[in-house]
Image (cartoon, rainbow, N blue to C red; front, side, top):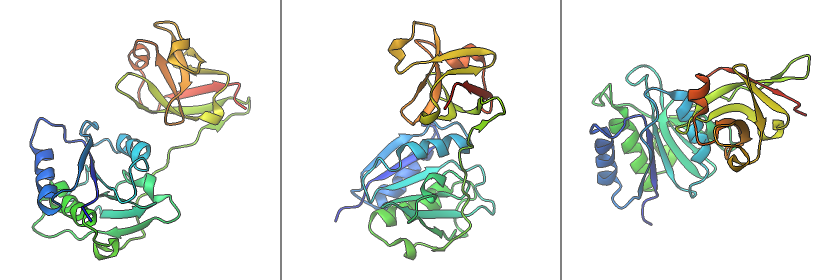
Length: 252
């Protein structure tokens, strides 16, 4: 059997040689494995963004795929390095919450990876995660990679809360490259009017229902309510940051 596909999600950017070094290890140890660059543009050290990104894609790939995630501000410290088998996929990365989406599946199994003394204290992506990913892609069982591990960090998206007046209070999770504001309000909550930073946004189904420059809210492809400006940037218009309060009136 040929090696399984290996995907890469990092905050390395592409201006330096870090991604190239990572790939050099992978093609050397798992020749023929398809390597899929998902993104190397996660903001530096942004664990929250990495976790949300992983949640979007990890199940979209075929069973057997190995997902490598390297957003690792704690590299070289006592944080664990882990590999996960979940719903037929495998994930490798630091134990800082970036791999959380795969940990909540009922069949999730986790092992802690050994870190050799020769591994660079600043580049576990190359010296720890890539070699493990290559072995997994070539068919090595998870249990031969490391020891069972029960202490993996599990980060969850905070749920919205309802106040005494029936208003649903959520928060901004992240901002995408279009300037859309992604909130923790879910599809089932999507009715009524969304208010943020003193501005109201009516709920629409598509961007085409909005007028150019209009501030609106709609359910995005991830199932979360997003606040957008047609042909513009809601983030720039409102100057909003992650954690800002979003209020939904008229929710069931």
